[in-house]
Length: 88
Image (tube, rainbow, N blue to C red; front, side, top):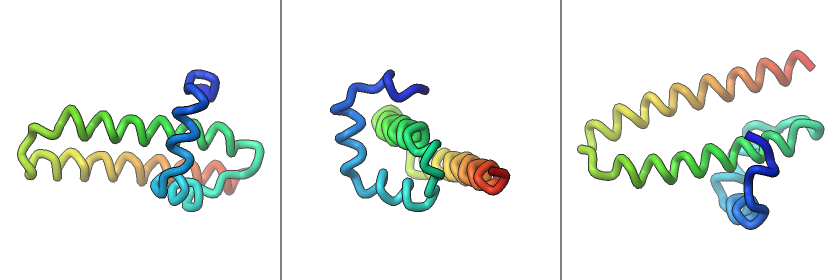
């Protein structure tokens, strides 16, 4: 996903959230990758909001399983980003 795919107002909205700030702090991208990282964080936050709306009709047990799967996926992505960061 590229930064110019997002409306600037949408990106600004998400940059102001604590979730965005915390994700950026945890990932701490190198300056040359910061813009791409910010775009990816916004994409993830939009996806999570969509996920909440679509799956809100599921039982708590189903949601818990899906969220655990999402957590594993996100941990994998963070670990991969960390490995790439260490290689630079």
